[in-house]
Image 1: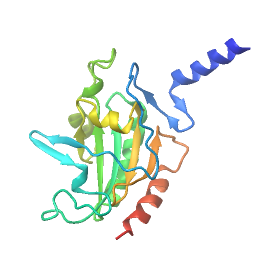
Image 2: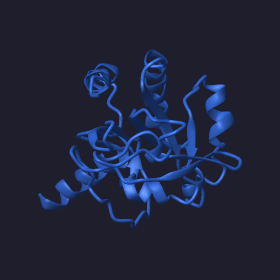
Image 3: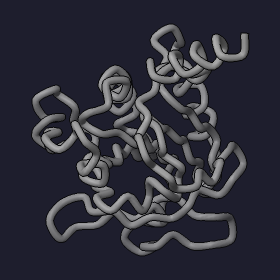
Length: 204
């Protein structure tokens, strides 16, 4: 009985499904998942947005009592939506159109959407060596959200993105208000995120 259960268990894992939805697991990733949850302070990051250009989380959100990184040129606190993805990640491709819809919906609000690309950080995995580069790949799919490049996997480790997609919504005071693993086509993804975002946008 035990051996049958073990076989079934690992068969389900190999399909890439969990109680959180469909996921793409990064093999041989021995980094420690910090287990970020609602109420935790979001780890800081500085990620490349283009040649010689960097984006900082602290430019948009910071803990209470602390000033933003660029208070003179960018004094307003923003809600931040992060989604870790890679071009080889099939569940990510299902999530992306819904994120793009939300990105367009809230284009006039104080909210920042960022796709954090870990394609380069995982390119050494067998079978993913020829994965397309994120910029041209997403352009072809009509995805216009800003892409940040985590080529060394530093942010991936800090946020525990050992499987994809991994999404976080961070409030104006750098506190995590939603943490999601995987993508479930049977859930109202846009409705769930909109409900959280709408409430957070009311914060002063």
